[in-house]
Length: 209
Image (cartoon, rainbow, N blue to C red; front, top):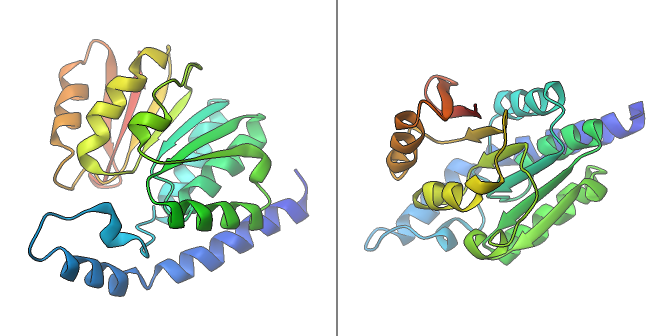
């Protein structure tokens, strides 16, 4: 990896992170749409809902330090988190398989990943993650959960047979409703998983023992 590649990736992240600062306006519009019904992913089709820079950097460091090669992401959105994951995959000669329900977000993410110079390290799958990852058959080194919160546990269980000793699972937004079933599951299986709360409770980092 040369300086040009690093600069290209960081420049793209800077642009996207700055644009994501306007999310409070976009989120407000989404909440208005869901005022008289449950929230739906489509309500936030124009919203980044990104990880923070700190979270992205922590995940990148975890992947590199643990030499993770097969990386799976639930919830691409516009690709900010995917770029952090793919930058790490570039360093470990790995690959990111990421999935996004909304086609407009997946298309935008694909463009952003290309701008970051990381297309060779990412496989973007469009559609319901329970379908796009249903036949995933490779051992998973790192799993990032950041999609619809009610699906954390079902998706986790779907991919659980692909975990191995030292598989890392990073679950974001653990302070939001809908994640309690996932939290209960991993915390109650202390003989299988080591789980700790990080980023002041915003995320869980779990390791398969």
